[in-house]
Length: 382
Image (tube, one colour):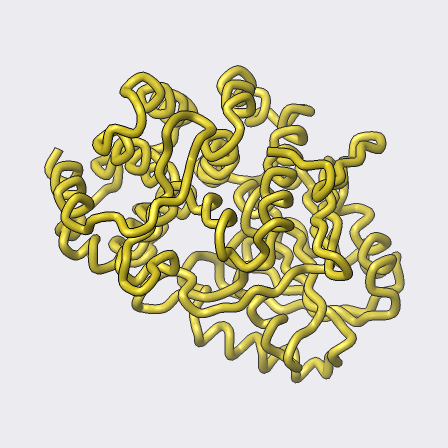
């Protein structure tokens, strides 16, 4: 997928830099162990003299906020910290309103910046605040989960959830810098790391068969935290950066990044975002399997590659069937109603990311709802 005209990868010591080429709004993704220690200097170089509001959830704050604040102090950056509760339920209108008010109460000006220190929930919520307060403030992503480092921190998608579905209220608002310290992933619970790995595998499945094969051979080293982890994060970011540079507002090719997400988001909504039952990456894992199985049902892909995808996701410990979700699930009709609210629906027509093989995903518009309903009924009753 890599196009050197739109993506620049630099390797210096143990740090890699991926450039998201968006003209004057382009920005760097800095990747490596220990990046957090130099975060203050890196932010000061991009935003000299800016005051910062640093948003972190309570769990991340207890682990990393002190070290991050020390780095800002060494760089001479004034800052205030704001904490939010952990979990998907934090991506709501109530917390959005509270954060907007706290940023304004801190008297930050339009030339100042808001920093998201945390996982995808904090990044999505904080980015939406940055897009809205004073009609747009600078935004820095410091992702502390694998999922955020390889996916949600890059590309400018921000937002909150609605009772109608996931991420339905938001804005495109690009960060000015992304700092991905792969060492902080050592503190992630295994379940959360696995969930993030689903997004890593996604990049191989949607457009890079060689990367998927590399993951099959190296996933244990990625989990262990060696140089393979840095490489997996960097390759994922390069893939996303290329797509974002070509289709920033998701009018075409960027939709490929939603492989597994139409089904996955519906599953998350169906369990009311109860993370004890399902977290986002687990929903994506099941969703990617459903996308491959639905593609097989339509005669687009053979059984062997579908079995290969299932085997790899299961080997790393990810769920691969709806039966892996604890508790009762809604009917196929309810799932279809949720899918109909998905952002990828256009004029009422269902859009799915389907596949002709590993590394060969494509966007299919106008999918017959009856075919989807029959497929979901079969999977729910299996």
